[in-house]
Amino acid sequence: MDLRFEFVRRQTSRVVIGRGTTTQLRQALDEAKLRAVVVVHDEALAGLAARVAIALGGAPTLPVPGTEALKDLRHVETAVAALRQLGADRGTALLGLGGGSVTDFTGFLASIWLRGVPFVACPTTTLALCDAALGGKNGIDLAGRKNELGTIRQPELIVGDVDWLETLPDALYREGFVEVLKKAAVLDGERFAELERLLPALRARDASAAEAAITMAVAMKMAVVVADETERDRRRWLNFGHTIGHALESLAAGALRHGECVALGMLAECRAAGPSVPAVVMQRLAAALRAIGAPTEIPRSFARVDELWALAQLDKKVRDGLVPMIVPAELGRGVEVALTRDALALALR
Ligand SMILES: NC(=O)c1ccc[n+]([C@@H]2O[C@H](COP(=O)([O-])OP(=O)(O)OC[C@H]3O[C@@H](n4cnc5c(N)ncnc54)[C@H](O)[C@@H]3O)[C@@H](O)[C@H]2O)c1
Image (cartoon, rainbow, N blue to C red):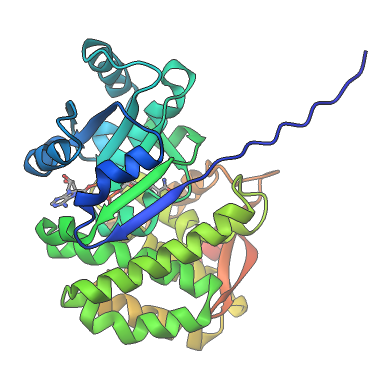
């Protein structure tokens, strides 16, 4: 016998982001037919988690560390034991409330526990709202390598309340908008120009500007993900800044944050791409990053060519020894070029 079977997976992922959306959570979960839920939350956000649990009619909570340290196998084991204790089962949705560390971790847990339970992402940082909680990529780190274990699994529901951002420190607040600039730089020149106009208001933490930028991020990212969920084509464009950025993040081992590494990675990749990126593109990108308060110079202590090159070669996108990266050939249009050790050395000078 030689038969072929085509599997067609139909799934809806609903995104509700705005001001005061906490009050809509219960209804949104009901509409997604999600009754039982456990709130897996950043332990530093216990007050917010309690409010969310009340809004959900008294849902149980499971506190976890809210930083990169959470993305570790040992925390998967601990969380599974806690879910068992809470009496959760296959019909229980896991709601991840926190930054990208918590949404990456909870999405991963939801995709493997009991072969998969429903997942709701409630991002509480600008970076998670603009990027990490969108698109279904989740995972944990292994042996110091970022996202070495992971799955692609869309959340049934993403709910974000712009009011949750009020407690974020300035540096973290601004950092998420680096990911919006990144998307616009390779996908949409008009939105890049619109973001340039919004930058002073974003820096001043204006809530309407934040909502506008987050809305742009959702529109740009989800359009790409719906067309190319498994990154065979256009989704790879979203990796702009992440080839050198991820290598830097691994090398810095916590001393530089994800958004900072992406900002530094974007500029280094543009420099490494040589004539593929026009000078005016570099200038506007660098000016926008400066305006949002992101770093633009890789600290000398991390400009270590051999180590960064070795780490870049561990990138999941590497094929046949080629390290691909996406850079803007013009604002709004990405192009793929290969990173070489020499080009990296040049970019780090
Ligand atoms: N899955 C994806 O597609 C994707 C995309 C980008 C980034 N990521 C991942 O996201 C992670 C980084 O996420 P992050 O930048 O949100 O950082 P984070 O989740 O590590 O949180 C950073 C800090 O912010 C605190 N925090 C969170 N929300 C807060 C709030 N509302 N008020 C005050 N403090 C708050 C946390 O306690 C923590 O100390 C990385 O692991 C990165 O790999 C994933």
